Length: 479
Ligand code: GLU
Image (cartoon, rainbow, N blue to C red; front, top):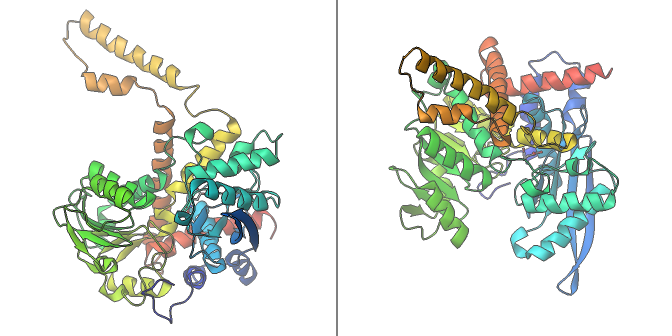
C-alpha cells in the first residue's frame, strides 16, 4: 500500500484478481479452469544469510510462479524494501497475461528481494545477488528451460550478468546457460535495444493508439502525438526512455515529471535529458533550476495534461485520488499503478486507460528476442545483413545505369541511398520485432474493445485476449 492509499483498498494481488474476475465473467470458461488460471501455482520464499561488514545479515527473497501453461516461465526480479509475497504474486500473474497478450511463449513468474539496493556497495550487492541466485538456481527457479528472470525495479544489466555467471558456474556443461536470464549486458550475451525496450514499447503503444482516430476520440483527444502534453511519474529506466522518445521523436511535450522527492512542472516543456542528468547527479529533482518544483509530487498526477504515464510504483492512482485525475488518457508504464477501485472510477469518468499488461510489455518482448538469440547462439542479422545490402546495391546500380543510358538525369538523394543501402543490424531487427508485436497486440485488444458490446475498456479487452490464449493452451494439454 502506498502512503496515500486508502485503508479499504484491496491488496495489489486482490486488485489484479478483481480485474481478472471482471473479465472472466464475460467468458464461458468452466469454473475449474477459471480458478486454475487465476491462482498462483507456487511461491518460494527463501531467507539466507550473507556475512557483510563483519556481521551476518539475513535477507528475504521470493520467486513466484503464476502459470506454467508454457515454459519457461518469465518475469523480472525486483530489489526493493517494499517487496512482499502479495506483490510478487500479483506481478507474476500480470506476467502471465502480458506474455500471452504479446505472444511471448512463456508462463508468468516474478521474483523479489527485500533490500534497499542503495544501502550496499557494488561488491556487497554482488555477494547478495549471487547468493540469492544460488538459492533459486539449485531449485531450478532459474533455468533456461524452466524459469528465466530479467531486470525489474532496482535491478539492471549488472545484476543479470552476476546471475548468468552464477548459473554458468553451477551448470558448467549447459551449452544454453546464457539463456537462463535476460537483460544481460551486450558483452555478456545481451541483445541490442533491451535497456530501452520497455520505454520504446510505451512509445510504440501510443503511436499505435494514435493511428486510430476513433480510439483517440474516445479519450476526448484528436490529432497525433505532436504537441500532446505528457506528465510522467518516475524517471527510472522505463519513464526516462518513454519520455525521451515521445518528446524527441514524436513531438510530445513533457510538462511534468514526478519523482520521489517532488515534481517538476513547466507547461512549455521540460528537457528530459537535463532532468535525467540532474537526478543522476543529485539523487532527485530538488534544486533543478529550470522548472517549478512542487514538494508534493503526487499532486501533479492530478494536473491538467493530455497523457499521464505512471512509470513508477503500483497503486499510485487509488481510491484517494482517482476522482481528481484529469488526464483523459493514462498509459500504465508501471505494473499495476491503478488499483481496481480507481479503475472503476476512471472508467466511469470516461478516461481511457492503456493497460499495463500491454503498455509495458516491450521489456519482456525484447527479453524473448534475447532468449532466442542465446539459444540460437548467433546475433540477429549476422547472416542476412550484407546479403540484403548487396541486393539493394543491385537495384541502386540498375536505376543509376538506366538513368545514365537513357539520359534521364535521375539522381537518388544521398539520404535515400544511405538508408536504403544499409542492411538491418540487430538493433533495427529488435525495433522492428517490437513495433510489430505492439501493433499486433493493440489490434487484438481493440478488436475485442470495439467488437463486443459488453466490453467497454481496453483492460477488460486485454484480459479477454490473454485469458483466452492461456485457456486454449491449458485445454490443449487436456485440462
Ligand atoms: N520486469 C519486466 C516486466 O515487468 C521484464 C520481464 C522480463 O523481461 O522477463 O515486464
